Each structure stands twice: as structure tokens, then as C-alpha cells.
Length: 262
Length: 229
Image (cartoon, rainbow over all chains, first blue to last red; front, side):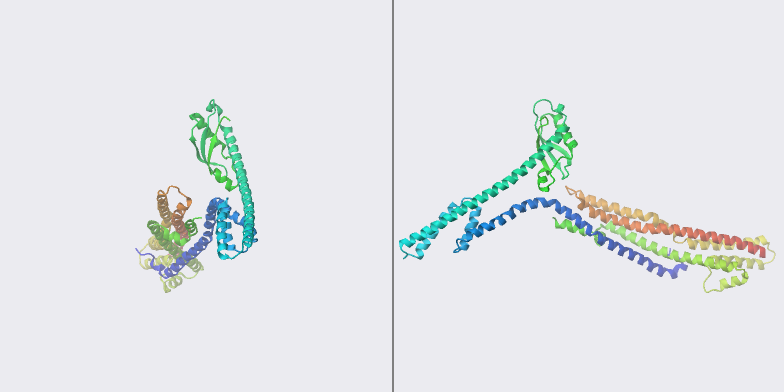
């Protein structure tokens, strides 16, 4: 069986060329459109990046804050003692790490004194005394600065603690809101008398919706009550959660103590 | 965050979709491409031949009804370089048979008419066969190639999901490339089928119109011959 009839022979070549041409044009159109499409998945991947950003930002923040606050401290210490900047710098760094810098200071006095006596053994006792006093003064100054610095860092810590406390207050507030919302849907009759307490594990998404079914990690002892709370969690979805992604991370896998009869 | 997933997402160019597919899917795509090329080849051949036949019919009808001598027309038709085709070949067969039978003595008019009519009918059938050529192929392509493409897609998706069974947590990124690869097969199948169906319907209509034209010409020419006889 031949592909074409005899009278079609003169047309075969022309038709074949046109056919290949049609496919070539279509392939070109397809390629162009696919190039255009290949940009879209990249932006989809960006969304994936966003998902991981909050934890990274949280990790980066504490690392970024100290250098800014440390700079002025370094300058203040540098000014009165221009003699041994390298040594000083090292000491400052040590001090930063250690909240109690008493030990390294003693080391320094011990270290410096013999050095000076060694260098200038012919120095008369008065001058020597003077020098020692000067040194002591310097040390006292340093001490003061240390104290100031310690105060500063303490204030800083207090601030951080305050922010943390504020965050904690916000988180607790949301947890309480969540409890209240769930409580609305619990049938108190199923939980009987007494004060049943249970622990829930709920997976949430940023909109506050509950993913999957809530798990009772610690039962109240009353099966009907547990089940009622489980249902209540699902009914209460979406739960109130903070909008800030950093705060929300605390709620992603929420573990909640819950007293249905409060 | 994960650079490999980003690469996988951005690397969905047509070429990777074609080369990344499994062997059965690639075979399906190759078969479909061949079918598509052939069907477009036939489509163009058909467009040319049917246009030619229509033009020939118009020209011949014009010459036939302009009221010239039938003998002269016959000479002109047979005298050309090419073997007559279409309506002129029907005329040629009928007129030749009529002239031949007319020369024989002792034949009834009805016999002469019958003979020339039979000759015209035979030529008509041959012409119709030529006009109908390749149309069954286009019809088959139109109805079957979507299924071939679908077969490739089903196979590809099966593979995509089978690969997924080893993964604890399935993400869209793991299935999407496989499904995209698989869907290419359906796309090619549809690309082969849609023009074939459209062409088939168009050509079938054209052939029907030509057939009606040929048949009415046969009837009218029979009447003319009968008047002459």
C-alpha cells in the first residue's frame, strides 16, 4: 500500500514542506510560550522561601543587635588609655563575655607591675609610688566603666526580658483567647463534675485554621469529655492567632492545657 | 531555600519535558509526531487536489454549457497533455462509449444510453475514489490520536505517582514535573487530532458537493446524448 495516489505525486513535496513548516511554527510558538512560563515557577519558589524566613530573622536579630550597642563602649574605653590599644581591645572583648571582670583585672595588675619594675629598676620609690597610684587610678576608672557597662548590659537584658515578657503576655493572651473560643463549643455536661484537665496538641496554619484532627496528649480521664473537646476544637476553627509570623511560630504546633469547665 | 527545588521548578522548558519523560511516553510522543506530520501532509495534498478538482469542475461546466460542439469539446479534453480527470474524464468516458455504440448498427437507443451511462458511472466511481483518498486516515487520526496521547499521559502520571510512593511527605514539586511531562503527550495528541477532524469534515463536505455536481452532470449529459441519439 503506497502512501499517496499517483496523481498526487507532483503535490507530495510541496505538501510535505508545508507540513514540516506548520510543525516548526507550532514548536516555535510553544517554545516562546514555555520561556514565558518558566518565570512563573520561580516566583512560586519564592513563596517557599517566605515560609522559612521568620525563623531565620529571629536567629539573625540577636546577632545583629550587640555590635551596634558595643561600638560606643569601645570608643569610651579607648580614649583614656592610648598606650596599649591592642591589649585593651582584647580585654574589652573579654569583659563583654564575662559579666564579672574581677579576675582578669587582677591578672593585669600583677602582670603590669613586674613588667615596669623590670624595665625601670633604677626608678626611685616616690616616682614608683606615683606610678603605681596612677595605675591604680586607671584601674579604678576602668572599674567604673566596667560597672557602667555592666549596668548597661543589665538594662539591655532587662529590656530583652521585657520584650520577651511582652511577647509572652501576647502569646498567653492569644492562648487564653483560643481556650475561650474552644470552650464555647464544649458541651459541659459531657465533662461531668470536678475539674477535668487535659492537654491538646493542635496543628495550625497562619490563618488560624486547624489542620488535621486535634490530638489529646493527656486525657482528662473522661472519654466523652475528650471527644467533646476534640469536636469543639474543630468547630472553633479558625482559632485566633497572632498575625506576626514570629509570634505565630509559637502556635504552629500548639500544645495547650485546657480545662473545659473553667 | 533549597536551591535544587528552585532549579527543578524553573527548569520546565519544553526540551526537558520531552527528554525527561520515560521511554513509553517518549515513544508515544514520537508516534504522535509522525502521525501529526503525516496527517498534515495529507491535509495539504487534499487541499490542493480538492481545490484543483473544484476549479476543473467549474472550468469544464463553463466550457460544456457555453453551447459549443460536443465533438470539439471531446477533442479538446482528450487532446491535452494530461489524462483528463474529474468532470472532463466523466464526459470523455460517456461520450467515447456513446460514439462507439452509435457506430454499431442495430442497437436500440436505450441500449446506447445504458452503455454510456455505465461507462460514466464507472469513471465517476474511480474519480470519487481519488477524491476520497486519505480521508479515512484523517478520520482515524482525529478519533484515535487523543487516545494515544491519553495513554502516554496515563503512563507518565502512573510513573509520577509510583515515584511518590517512596516519599513520606508528598509535595506538589515532586509530582508536578512528572505530570507536566505526561501531559505533553496529550497535548501532542490533541494537536494531531484537532486539525485532522476539522480537515476531515471540510474535505468530506467538499467531496460530497463534488459528487453531487458530477452526478447531476451525468444526468444532464445523458439527457443531451438521448436527444442526439
